[in-house]
Image: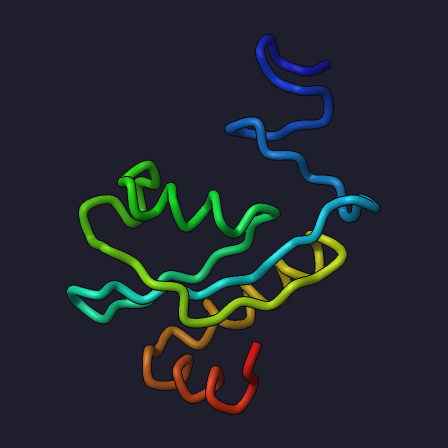
Length: 107
């Protein structure tokens, strides 16, 4: 049963977890802080809104660490595909390795 105030089938924070939807595109993305150079890796179905939320301090993990610029994105037809790449990139745990991967795999 869905919690009050959340759409049926949504998880924590109201996120939907369907694997695919005919009208939605999903993205794996990498942001870079224009101040520190640190990277943030994530996935979303609305890249423009997600970048706005990162840059307006609405995301706890990137709050007060920006501004952020988008340095990589890749579009998928299912969330599960986007999550797979997100996990792969996060497993690198090394900024230099991630930047090299971007050079070899342009979005």
